[in-house]
Amino acid sequence: MDPGEFASAVDVLQRPEPDLTSAVALDDVDGGAAGATPEVAVRRRVSIPEGVPLAEVTEEAMRVTGRLASLDGVVGAAVAVDPRHWEVVHFSLWAHDSPKAAGEVYRVLHLSAPERDGLRRGRQW
Image (cartoon, rainbow, N blue to C red; front, side):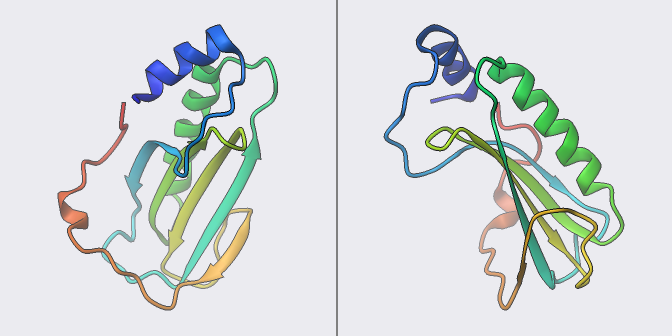
């Protein structure tokens, strides 16, 4: 389902609990250190408030992702909506071990990215 269709369903049905195991990807942005090997990853989860239009939430999430990707040392940043938990989830990979982003920090021990170059960049809907 395309995120736009999901937003329309939310407008009509309010907050259905979809039986999904994955999130709806919104945006994937290369950072200034895109060619570097990441040292750490940051995941930040933000609850989606009841009653806020999903379109507004997604637009703001993509603006935040763009700002995040512009920070020094960012290898890449992505954002998704988790409709199971009603959260926006921001991910970022950093070329150094002192990320300038809030969230849970994880050390990257190995990054497997086969065919990453074939992925479509930018807004996914």
